[in-house]
Amino acid sequence: MRVRLLLAVGSALLASALLVAAASAGPYKVKSLKAISGPSPFAAGCPGALSDDTNITGHELEPAIAVNPADRRDIIAAWKQDVGPFNGTRSDLVASSQDGGKTWTRSTIPGLGICTGGTADSPSDPWVSAGGDGTVYFSGLAADISTEPPTTAVVASHSRDGGRTWLPAVTVAPPLPGNETDVIVGSPTLDGHAYMVWANFTGELPRTNTVEFSRTTDGGTTWSPPVLIDQTTPFASDQAPRLLVLPNGTLLALFARIDLEAGFGAHYAARSLDEGRTWLPPVQLGPHLPLLGFFHPEFGYLPQAHFPSAAVAPDGTAYIAFENNNSETSGGIGVAKSRDGGLTWSSSMLPGVSAYAFEPAIAVDKHGTVGVIWYDLRNDRLGDATLLGDVWFAHSHDRGTSWRQSHVAGPTDLRTAPLQAHNYVGEYQGLAGLPGGFAAAFTLAAPQAKDGPTDIFFAEIGPGDGDDKDEGR
Image: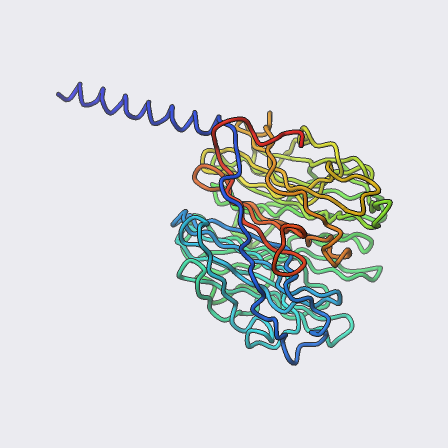
């Protein structure tokens, strides 16, 4: 009986493993696609907020998304709500789903801005993450635009119920003119631990530019004083830092640097071996990138946010995805990876992308499958009075050696998004790994947007039957 039982168990485990392998090797498709932003809760505006009358009701940008490791049905997204042209946003908004993305409930962060009981004129740059203990974390910026330049505080909040309700926002870094591009990451292994990074830079030369770090060890109630990760030269700026927690506890901060003296941009990685108390000097990863902006011959400025996206696999492989365009009609998405904790990196181009491409987001699911979403303009045609962009997805089962591509959404007419200076769709989009697939959050304009000039959409992308969705559309 014991031998037969072991054989039966072994056969069951083998069959289970074969099923998982078959599922992960199959084509990926969009299993669901829906708008999650809905009508603005601030249609009446925020009385008392400066420049509120210029904010555009129903204009949403810059979604972030997270999946709760304590309950994979719990998905949390955040975005900027009612964005205007003059550094204005009425609030950051959060949406949570307790059923894997089928239904969503929207909520706000108490005290984040004037619209939610605080004093800041313009909240911005939302980010969400969940720790291994189930605590969900939010970070953002809270700007006072009455000064010139505006001063911005880095703030955080947390939720104990999967993102449905939130504690009042607390200040992580005091208001300064250059605080920007915050990211928060919950620890997958240490209960109550979470980490934040952000950049501080100004537009005047010469300047003092820093990337900074803070952590909480009590679930987000208090945060440590800022710690310096990197300070570059007066004629360069570090921006858009991202943060990874590797399986061995190493923290990896990744950021873009624009170096005006050297004449190029590049991405860098800095490591901390003591939970962020100290940081080793950063190393460059990936190629040199041009400092040029690109312009559409009909509509002008094209999105070139240069905001990287980063992810870590269960085996500790770190990935970063970035824009790598070379003209207004051609380009691509770069992917770099490190298998030694961020010490050395290799980089390559995502195959099958030759049109102008922008705003990639990268993630890894629990099986180690790597996924990337991005926009590109392969369907745009000159002279048709539209600027057509599509959202695409590519996945790799072999750490980025080979990729297979699927169409996610679009075409959407970026020209109908009112703020060219905000890259039409903001500065970043969101992707997170599910148990077997990916949860994506991204911005679409007309004809998909129904509640204002843009809407935030959620897509579940995973293994499916049939061919991948239209690789050459």
